[in-house]
Length: 602
Image (cartoon, rainbow, N blue to C red; front, side):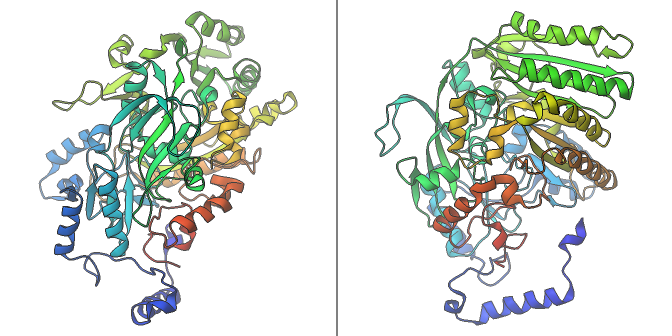
C-alpha cells in the first residue's frame, strides 16, 4: 500500500519546479491561488511576534502543542510510557489532550501527529480570529471537536489546530425559532461544538426527559457527527442526526461568523447536514430539534454457535427471514455480527418496547434454534432488558447492570463521564482495515433472501462482518426518511436496511514506540481479509455506497461512494464559501484539488 505514496524522480523534479515558479512568479499569474501552505522553518512561517498577536486576539487561548507520546521516546521512560498507555484506554484523557485523537492511526495510511499550535477557542469570535490568522499566513489547519475521525481528519502535522473542546455549553429551549425564519416555535437544544454526546444526553434525556437524535458512542463530538450525517442507536425511528439540525453557527474561510439555517444561507446549512466535517468551515454551535421520549429503551443480546458450516448457513437464512418479518421496523436498531468461527452475535437495541414485548418478539427465533440442539448452542442465556428511557444514559440508574458503562477513573473526574464498555476497543486504536457498504432493502425480498444469507456466509469466511441496522433508514417512519432527503447524506442510506461493516485494529497502540507498536504484518494481512470480505457483499450491492465516517481510508471513487448525486452541489457550496481551499480533510469535498497532505494545490 505504501507504494501509492512514492514519487518518481520526474514527478519530484516537476513538483520542485512548480514550487520554484510559485515563489518567483507574480501572484496574479496564478489567479491568486494559495499554491503551497507554510511549514515551520520555511519563509513565511509566522514570527513569534505574530503568534503573540494571535494569542492576544484569542484571549490567551493559544497553546503550544506537545504530545504526551514524547514521554515514550525518552531514554529510560518505560514505566512512564506504560502509565501513559493505560491513560490511552480512557477517551476523556485523550479528549483533553490537543495532541491526541481517539484513533491513533491506520497502518500504511496515517498516524495521529500533533499540530504546532492549537487555539482552544471559547467563542466563535476567537475561532474567527484563528481562521483569519491561518488564511493570512497560508497555514494548514486542522479542526477537532471529539477527535473520533477514523480517517485522521482531526489532526495534521505542521498545522494550526482549531480546537472546540472548551465550547461545551448546553442550552434548552421550549420555543426555538431559527434566526430569520417564521416557522412555528419548537423545543430544541443548543450545543457548543465541543460537547460530547454523552453530556448532551445527560442534559436532554436524563435531566430534562426529552430526546435528541445523536450518536451511539457517548464520547463522540456533536459537531463532527452532525456534519457526517450521523446515526445513533435509535435512528431507525428518529432518523439522521443531521436531519434534526435547525441552525448552526459557523466560521467560514473568510473569517466571518455566520448563522446558517433553512432561511439564511440555506446552501451552507444543507452542506453542513452530512457534507463532511472540516470542509466548509468551523462549526462552533448547533441547535437541534428535541423529540418526545418513548416509555422504554431496551436491548436483546444473544450469541449462537453453530457446530458446522452447513448449520451456520442455515442459521443465517433463519436470521435473514426472522429479521425481514419481525425486526425490519422502526423499533429495532444496532447490530448482528456474522463471524468466521460460525457464530452469530446479536446485540440489538430497541425503543418503545417493554421487556415482555422484547421477549415475545425473539422467542420464535430462540425456539427455532432450540429445536436443533446438536446443530446450535447458546453462549449463555439470552438477555432481554427494558429500561425507562429517561435513565438510558444515567450512570447511577444503569449501575444495576454491572459492566455496562466504563468511567473516567482520573482523580477528580466527573462521575457522569462514562462510555459504553462495548466501545472500549475503539479507544486509542490503530486501525488495520475498515470498510462499509449500505445494503439495499430490496435484498430482504423473499426471492433474494437466500442469496443475501449465502453472501453473508461467504463474506464471513474472510473476516467478521456486522450488520448495523440502525445505519440504514429503510423501515423508518416516512417523516424520518423525508427529513433525511433534505440532507447531503448519500441517498443510498435512505433505501438501505443496514450498513455492513468489517474492520480490525489494535488498541491502544502507536507506530514507532517500542513495545507499543501495531503489528504491521498482521495488520496488512487483516486489511486484505477485510477487503475480501466486503468485496463479497459488493457483489450484492455494487452501487451501495459507503458511510463517510465509517469507511476505508483508501475508498475508491469516494465522491460517489460518500455522497452519490449530492456531490456536485456540495462542490459548488465549497467553491462559494471556501474558494481557496483553506479547509482540507482527506477525502473531503474539494480535497481532490490538493496533495495528500493538504499542503500543495495541484
